[in-house]
Image (tube, rainbow, N blue to C red; front, side):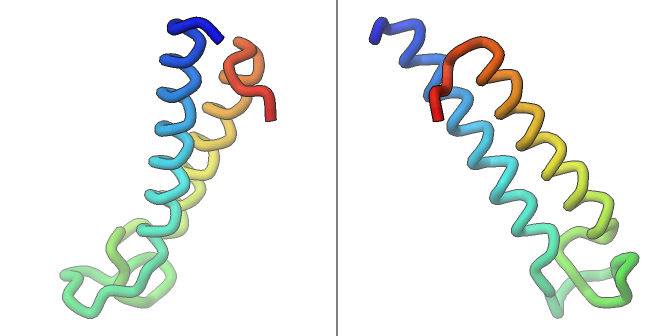
Length: 74
């Protein structure tokens, strides 16, 4: 595996992990939040269902782009 392929594979994996972790963080309840989210509970993200959907779309699109560019093989 050459250096360029290893570099971009690492970048894509880190991006996918970041998207997945932001998806999880948006739905975690938080009692110290200042606003109620759209699902009527206090969460880290005040627009919880929409932020979660955006993060899932970001993770899936990053995965698709990395597959199209042949940087990820799984």
